Image 1 (cartoon, rainbow, N blue to C red):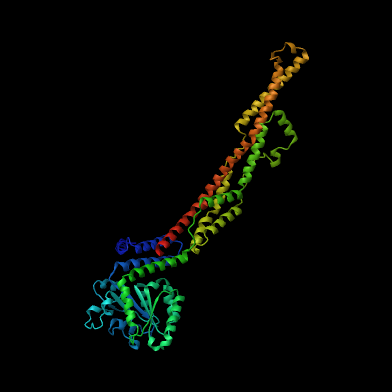
Image 2 (cartoon, helix red, strand yellow; image 1 turned 90 degrees about the vertical axis):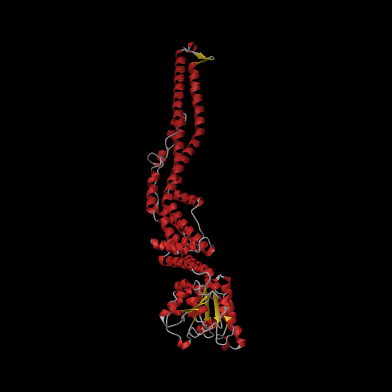
Length: 536
């Protein structure tokens, strides 16, 4: 946006800054900003145009209410306009000009010039009602109205359609004039009324030519008009039956317009309706699903399932078995360890090779399936474009995820060596066994040579016997103590390996899945927050 455009936007927004309408406009703009890349630009630009149009209208005269009289050919739209004005200013029937411009009459000229310029009504097509010489039917209650007679919306002239469409977007209050023959016309309902379902607070429907209908049938026809409007989502719209030609009901129409002008709400209500409608159109594309994020619980579930698919539990179990087996043999009393080795198959022979557990290659398809399931889950309820973006954020780095899991898991030190205390215990066990063997051999030697009586003694027992007993007893006691410590140590090693392996899984998932997904979901949360503010 250029500097000049920035300044123009600043001036335009001054009129709504700090107001409830300003908060709605800001919400719509925030939703548009958050939706860039998720909703097609033309739709976002259309929503921004609605925000700019609303802000621009509020900058202009707050003393005037722009009322558009719209209708089909033959509906009596221009007759209704002329009756309200009190002068024949708009041509009727076959004398209606083929111009694509609307005709406007202003009650109260002060401040209306800039508004008429904004409406695009050239000077030759508007009249200041308070400057007319003929004031016989001047009605001060209409002061502040800019009354426009639009071209026929069903005209064969394309320019007429464009002019009607343009001014219908700009008018503060829309008065649709229908007649008994064409009030159910699909062109009117489908092209104008249904799309304006959010604008029923700034709309009036006038059933003209009521004098051509028998009095006993009028109520039924009015009820039918209301039924069709309700089907369009306009059940609260005011419906008036009039005859511009005979003057029937025209006082009611004039009073309705005067009431809308006096309330000074039509302009703001139209702007609010435009913002709400634009927000709802974005919502239909962007999605209505609840705001969500990958919270801690859901991330934990993802990590658990991914770790399971990568074989982490099996590796951890293998670590516990391996460490328990090797530590158990390290702390065993050596004679028992030697006998056990001969009578049972070792863990190495059970697992093949060294028997050490190893991290297998990550099964990519299983991990991919888990992550894709997450993408489907978090994208549920979002609009198609946003859902694709979220799913892409979740699954877009699956190859990198697989490579990182493979490399990271294999680099983890599983700590398969026996604990330090077990190694020390093994040395002590062998020393005690050596003491017992030396004592036993010495004792046998003394007994065989008959020198036992003269050998050194402790508490009446030969030192050789004491050495044998102490070596055997302490060795067995230390074996029993060591056995009690084996499984806690193995579990601790397994827990450490499990923690390190899961850290790898967590880090890989965070970088490849969780962070990108949450970034997209935060954008969606900003979009939903903006929509909520715009439609509040």
